[in-house]
Length: 385
Image 1 (spheres, rainbow, N blue to C red):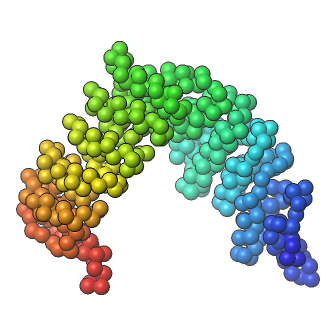
Image 2: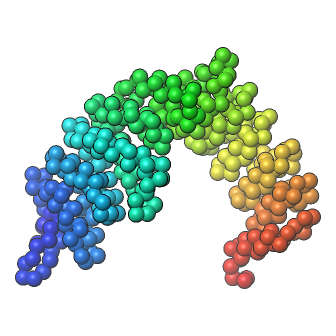
Image 3: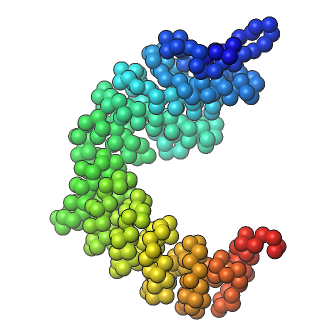
């Protein structure tokens, strides 16, 4: 029995056996339907766990397996374990002709999928809605990875669903459907929530060029909205060009998009942002320095804490100095306790509690700040409370 392969329930002298994945050869692989039934019928926790492991390794090989995936999607009796595992099975489809069998799922249930994406119809609870959304993403990404050209018509329709645009646009680009970018681009005139950047560097370059074109100034705000979708690290040089854009909204969105994929190799760009004339860009720089480790950052944060003209940047700098535990910033934070803005004084007070384990006095302090500081001190010295 130790050499058995996949899960099966067998009664032999009154005993139920669970088998490990190594016994069956490729030709003996049971169907997806059989494995799902085994999982649903496994009553003992250990049997169910083993069944889930076997299903988690399953790779579809037949049209019947694909049909079973569609049945799981359409099943109204919600079983999160089955649904989540089958979502993983979708990602292991490795033949385009099999992946084509997923297209009817997108076509026939588009209305339901759109509602799920908009969180209007999450089924029995929010968890089901989330799982179904992830399932649809798996389908789209599988069609992308296998470059299933027959999926292009339905994917073009799915560009209208804002919550899926990034993934659909990527899929269309991978498949080679270049027209999708231009067609989606036209909708910018009607909507500020269209994801253009998901198509990759070519589309990002077009957005940056348009944002530098004075003749398209009336579209800058809507184009700036698209920067929130940029996730490609290769786009950082293009985004950096927009840090000094004449439109404040574009400057902020470009900085925020840049820092989403930044690391300490981008310290020169972050330091450039910290000197920007726009307080929103400087604020983004502070948050980037809070997650970074470049040696210049602490001194720059102290400078912003003491000298920045905008209180939002000063309070963010106080936060960062405390959270990063820059102990040599204590004198500067003590100075910030006299800041003209109460909210900055509050953040300096909390940062000092983190760094020194003390509660300082300052003008305007309220009971809620005392309580927050007490909680910090308790976490800092749990044995003393």
